[in-house]
Image (tube, rainbow, N blue to C red):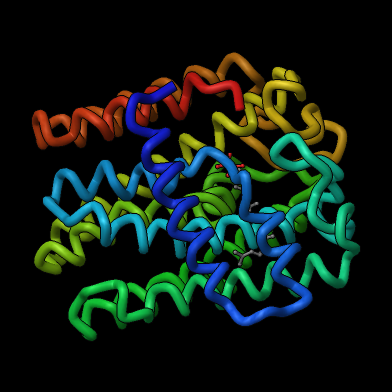
Amino acid sequence: MLNDLNKVVKDINLFLKKYLKKQKYSGLLSAMNYGLFPGGKKIRSKILVDVGKIFNVKYSKLIIIGAAVECIHAYSLIHDDLPCMDNDFVRRGKPSTHVKFGEATAVLAGNSLLTLAFEILSNKKLNLKEKTKNILISKLSSYSGHTGIAGGQFLDLDFENQKVPLKKIVDMQLKKTGKLFAYCCSVPAIINNNDIKKINTFEKIGYDIGLLFQIADDLIDHRGDAKKAGKKTKKDKKFGKATLISLLGYKKTVIYSKKLRIKIQKKISKYGWRSKNLNETINYILNRNK
Ligand code: GRG
């Protein structure tokens, strides 16, 4: 376990718990809480905090932005588990949201978490210039939509039981998973001074980290320790998912992932001691078993 991952988990959960408590009552709040808590690893928020360290961004701002990102992520997991998508009954070691609350409530709770993310970003608690906030909101909305996460999910389902070339698999995974990581890596550069060169550099690093994360996720599925993973495993093969493992085989995918990790770590090494935490998180991403 990473030293300061626990702190990020604790602070994000605290922020979100308080935020949800202040919401007016609705019949969807229980399902929204269920999808958010106790929650997952908060690895996207950890990356945001790690890159925030490189760009000297205040921790409290990063926690608010991380909370918005985690709402989008939780929403994507709730919808991903639905019968019309991956039809998974277990998520984060407990019954999926639609199993517990029914499909209609799960769809609506997911939608509500999506909009909550933008409510959080536009809230005055996030003390940033209006112009910066607009950039953060606009970027997160386009990254979540049809050219981003939703588009990537569409391709993931569309590619089932097909022989898909490497470039297309990578493109799908960069959309489905890479977008939120690219967001988390570029946001600190946007807040710091909006230097386009630095934003682009960190955006690319984010996409690579997202791809690495997705490959690690596929390796976990392939290895098949469902208890540790907290979700059903060995599903990709069963459902004919297009992954690097299905195309290249397990051993070559492991080699691919190690090369990718080295490439990312080489890129961030030029930021010296400030990139130490990010470097550790990247090692964790590949070595984790859940
Ligand atoms: C537009 C946000 C949005 C969603 C609708 C359903 C859908 C379209 C997209 C699914 C995207 C998806 C589930 C990608 C997989 C990414 C992935 C590897 C998730 C697992 O993330 P972890 O391991 O989960 O960080 P925890 O439980 O730790 O939070």
